[in-house]
Structure formats: C-alpha cells, structure tokens
Amino acid sequence: MSIDPITLSVIQAGLQQVCDEMDLSFSRAAFSPVIAEANDRSDGIYAAEDGALIAQGTGGLPVFVGTMQYSTRKLIEMIAAGTVAKPKPDDIYIVNDPYLGGTHLMDVRFARPFYRKGEIYCWLSNTGHWPDTGGAVPGGFSASATSVEQEGLRLPPVRLFKKGVLDQEIYSIICSNIRVADQRIGDVKAQAAALMVGEDRLNALLDRYGDDVVKAAIAELRVRSDTQMQAFIEEIPDGNYSSTAWIDSDGVVNEPLKIHLKIKKTRGHLQFDFSESSPPCMGPMNSVLATTLSSVYLAMRHIFPEVPISAGAFTPLEILQPKGTFLDAEYPRPVSGCAAEVSQRIAEAVFAALVEALPHRVTAAPAGTSGNFALGGFDPETGRDFVMYQLSGGGYGGNIDHDGLSNGCSTIGISKAPPVEIMEQNFPVLYHRYALREGSGGAGQHRGGLGLDYEVELRRGNARASFVMDHGRFGPQGALGGADGAVNEVEVWREGVKYIPEHLSKEQDIPLQAGDRVRVKTPGGGGYGPALERDLDLIKEDKRLGRN
Image (cartoon, rainbow, N blue to C red; front, top):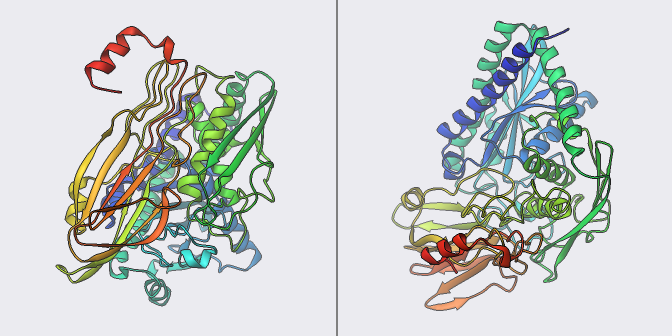
C-alpha cells in the first residue's frame, strides 16, 4: 500500500501523541514523587509479532526504548511457548525480571494487548520506577548485594489485571514483599490507567485512518528509520574506533571495572564490540543484555537525534553479545546499578570512541550518574514508615558550539529531580543546600557544565541511607584536549563527624538519626577542546559569574 508523505507524517505524529498522552496520564495520576514529579517512567507502542518498537513518548526515559522492546518480545515468546498465560482483552501483565529484557527490579513494566476485530493489533507497554520492591535495603539500591534476591522481589510476567480487574491474590503477594505497600496502589492504578488512555487514543487514530493504512504507515516508518540511520552513519569515515570508560567499583570489591569498546564502521553499518570489558562482578554493577543494547541505542540517539524513534533505527547497529563480561549479566548476578549507572558509562564509551570522527556532533562526557540516594525509616510524627528516593542531575559535556549545560538530567533519560518542597512535604527531611557546584565543569575551549551540590538533614526519627552512584573515582572524560569534570563526592555527617564511604559513592545501611546530614556533590561535565583556545569574552564572563 502506497501512503502519501503528508498522511505518513500525520500518522507518525499521531502515534507519538498517543504515547505522550500515556506519559502525561501516568505522571499526573502516580502517587510516588519519583514518577509524579521526576517522571522516571516511559510509555510506548510495540509490534504484535515481535515486540519491535513502533513509538515512544517524547517524555519517556530513552534507556527504556530498547529494554521495553526486548521485554515485550520476551513476553510474546513466552506466551507462544505456553509458559505464560495467553492474554484476553483488558488483561495487563506485570514483570520486573531483569533477565527477561529489563533493567533493575525497581523498574516495573506493565504490558497490555491492544485488540482490533478480535485480534492483537499491537502491545501497549510502560515502565515506572517504584520507590521500593523489597530486598535488603529501602529503595532497592543495595550497594553490596551479591545476588539479585538481595535486591528485591523479582516478578516473571503474570496477569496482574484479568479482564480489567486487579488480581487481589497476586497484588497481595507483591505487597507482602515490599515496604510502604499501602502506598503502591496509587502507582499501580496510574500505570494501568495510562495504558487505558493509550488504548482510547489509539482506537481513535485507527478509526480515523483505518487499520490497514496505519499498519502500512508503521511498516514504512520502520524502513525509513533504518534508511535515515544508515545515511547518518555515513558521516563517520570507514574504519575502526575504540575507547575505554571506567566504573569506580562494583560496591563489593573496591577495584575499577573496565568498559572497553571497539567500533567498526563499514558502509552504513556500525558494529560494537565490548568483549574486552571486565568479567562479571560480585556487586550490583552488572548489566543485563537488554540494558547494554539499549545503552548503545540511546547513545546513538544522542548523536543523531534527527532519526525517528522506531525499531528500524536500530537495524544498522550490530552489537556483539559481550559474553563473559559484566555487560551480559545472567541470573543470579545483582544488577541494581545497571540502568542508572552502567548504562551511562556505556554511552560515555560510545561518545569517547566517536568524538574524533564526529567532532561537530559528539560532546565530551556528561556527569554520567543518576545519583541514586535512598533513605528509609520511620517517621514518629506520622507514625508511618517511609522510603525516599532522590535522583540528581549533573553537568553536561562541552561541545563544538558552546559550554555544557549545568545540572542537566542524566544521560539515560529526561527525569528531573523532584522539587525540594515536595520532598520536604512527603518525608521528614530538610534541605540546607541545593545549588550549582562551582568549579566542577572540566576546563576547555568549551567547558563542561556544573554539577549539583545539595545537603539534606533527617529531621526526626531514625533512618538508613544507601547510595549507588558512580564517577567518584574517575571524573567524566574531557574530549579533544578538554579536562575531565569533577568527581562525585558523598559526605555523611553523623553527630558532627564526617564519614566518607569506602567505595566513595556506594554504600548501604548507613544509620542516621535526627540531626544527621548527607551532602552530595555531583560531577561536572568534561571539557571540550584545549582550555588555551577558550574565547577571551567567555573567560571574562566566567570571572564575572565567579566560576572557577
């Protein structure tokens, strides 16, 4: 079927709008600040045959582009094999198993079959970061976990909603294994409601243009994404490129982990080889394969943002399975740091490998950490337990045109830190500082952006603090002669005595009492180009603003 360009463009925008409305509905209805305020979630449409990505919301986390595709594909395969119950209209599956196309256990995925004329036309799916899924520490970021069971409850694909009705038995099992369980129903219903909104909007689109026309448009968009990505790849000269990025430690063994990347470019095709990276690690900084693949995809999306989001855009990217490395984790390896931290270092390796070939497109390394800080305890004023999850931004890398953005969101997404006022309203904490971290950007012709400097006090009760961050030992890489950005720093003040974790920005179960404080200084971005080539007017402006 031939589709004229205008109709194709309108349908593409319509599919995008369906996902955007799901995103908006999810955030507006969610209970947890990490979803409602930080937007740590994503919604998308996936092919009925193989789970291939059709469209994703512009406000969703890019790292979920690949993982939700593989998770949906795995669900379809398990249904076909008979290991998962077959769907019926209005069913919704829940799954958070990292080894089935996921990330870490806190990223909980819902999938709903979308029916037209009695057949599954496509799948609607979303992912939301739950503030707790059980495990050894509140918030799930167990810095010293040595198996996935210590990180929380692991769910295979099961129908949480059957014909639109919540299965109370399955939900009771979930609630019996997580903290602040009474608060999860708000997030569960918000996540399910977002998929129902998607169904209504997609039905309206199909009713307007016809099922066959929309299906033909989806196929054409996939082909065009493939063609466009190949065309952009041709900007890269044929040849071999390589880079190395480092993770501070795995949280258990205090030694760096290496990500070594080799890229081979040949005629519209890129091959990515991570086989010389470190072997599987004991701690939670292993990455499951779906997250590793998705990390490469999101890095290429950063470099070539013009390519539409579709499974076709990934076709020219061949990623060799990194067997025998910590980037291809298998059960029972712990993985809580894979999506939030390791994924960003993978993207950093892609940037470092291609910056010389594409100096007009690729930046120096960004902050590269989500700053995962979880605080769990009991609030005597409310008489309730709480789990607070704080993520934070950092500096972006400088680029050929200008300095890096200060306090930007992480490489893997567009999640924003929840407002201080919301955090103080929901949890027994008080922020004493929330400011740009002066001097943290790497020097360069265009310097890196500044990180964040915040300090939070526990006001009452007792709590336990846990951190899974990174770039505490190695700052974000500068590019083409630029300096590295400042490293991540964590300080815990207990009864007036400063404590610095052995692994610098990874530790769990640090006891806090009322009056104790935590201070976090996030990394600045890497500098781009030699500092001696910085424009004199920019230097004067730096001095006027008091930047170091």
